[in-house]
Length: 182
Image (cartoon, rainbow, N blue to C red):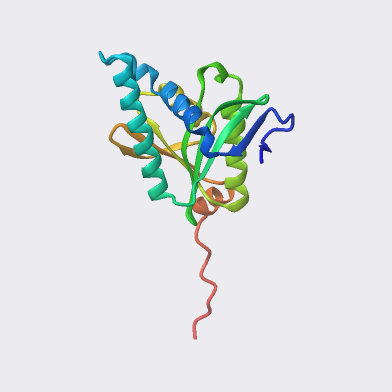
């Protein structure tokens, strides 16, 4: 069942179904296109490599976040990308977001992120995401939404956006000791 994320209902999510595998592979392949353009392999070998990476990524996320939410992003009634979310008692983790090139720069990512930030605020948990260091556009995108770096992990930067209440609590002075002697 699809659920709208914006007031116009243009951006919707629906759970991944078994029939979505080829679409999801196409989305993943599009997210690796620049990287694959640099390798001197034929198309068959590139596709085999990307498929193995796609399967490995899914297996890793599934192992680390067995209750993760895997969704197909729909924009104006058409499948446009994928969104993987992991939730734990300590955090909301944006595991992966990928939008097909023809749907990029139309506000879909911002709508999805605003929805996750609202959830973060509502439940008082930080929203975290890993961003590839060389992806300057993605880094700027998340910084615009208040994310900051919490860790440098080799090729990736671990970013976090804490909910406002948690930020205020963290920066508030400790309560005064009101116990009376004796």
